[in-house]
Image (cartoon, rainbow, N blue to C red; front, side, top):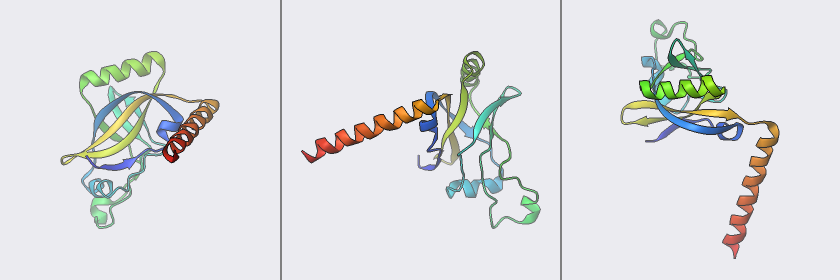
Length: 150
């Protein structure tokens, strides 16, 4: 299960409440750049459109070796559909609709031949909460280093 791309800012900017694995529906020429780790998740988010989850704002560059006939007019930020089980979709829908949470992508990885996206239902953190998290993390790091040196 090698990780291909990760949204490093997600855990700092959001409080993760629930994580779900989703399949990523890609075009044929998008698979190679994703497997090469060229997909960018920063600024991407997931929305519920027409009863299905879609990934918006994720960047997958054009595959260099693909012909213009195949890739002509390709939008690297296009909307991509996510595949989840109905039970998980209902659970996510209830959390987002009732409590106003948001859905964010955390990482892209492979499971066998399939490309999966780990998404999370999250609550956005305010600036002071972000600073508190960073302070707490620094203090924990200093304590670990002090214990290690003894």
